[in-house]
Amino acid sequence: MGEIVVAAATLAALGAGLGGLIACAAKIFYVPTDERVTAVEEALAGLNCGMCGYGSCYAYAEAIVHAGDAVDKCVPGGAASAHTIAQVMGYPEPEPGARRWTPQVHCRGGAHAAARQFHYGGVADCRAAALYHGGPKQCRYGCLGLGSCVRVCPVEAIDFDGSDLVWVDQAACIGCGRCVGICPTGVMRWIPADAEVMVACNSLHKGPVVQKQCRVGCIGCKKCEKASPDGGFRVSNFLSRIDYDTDGDRRRAAETCPTGCILSLAARY
Picture (cartoon, rainbow, N blue to C red):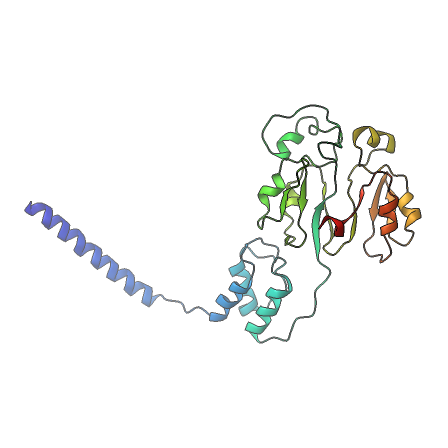
């Protein structure tokens, strides 16, 4: 019994001694932290997404404080972060940034619209499904709907929409681009966050092929160009695309589209 007490006392004394040494070392080697770095880091989005060009939010905060880097590089934080950081640093109010762009799913060919070439029962991952003849849908350009993008979104801005497809909430999206990088079909394409209309198709097939594969795909008929000549619609490679730098009326094109693939985003929300 005495040996146990001695051993316990020895361990306790050793622990106390080592703890004291660590405390002394912490004081001796303590490096003061600039409170501004902490304040700037707290103003950032905290996602460590790397879109600012740094490996972490802390590294970017240090660059702002100690290297004078710009205060508006945090894409997820946006104008709110830039405003707060400018106040912390005592800088003038930053000028409004460029137009904000977010990814959106350019496909509405869900379970009741798109024809399938086989039933997929494998791993619920779009990249895995695409390895099998391009995926279960006949259209190899469309959304596979298995949610790989949903799982990589850091802010839960992407969700399933009930038709075997996914949809991006552009108000919640921070524009990190992770969903774009993981999508095997390229159906995640960038549009302005304030866009009112989009062409919800990604197929480069000719019209007759599209009609066989999907009831809501773009057939390249060019009716959108004629209905909204100032709307920025241009059909190229059998697919209509919108030049969002053009500020014209696009509603007529949406109303005229024979397959309904030109969507009013205002109606979606």
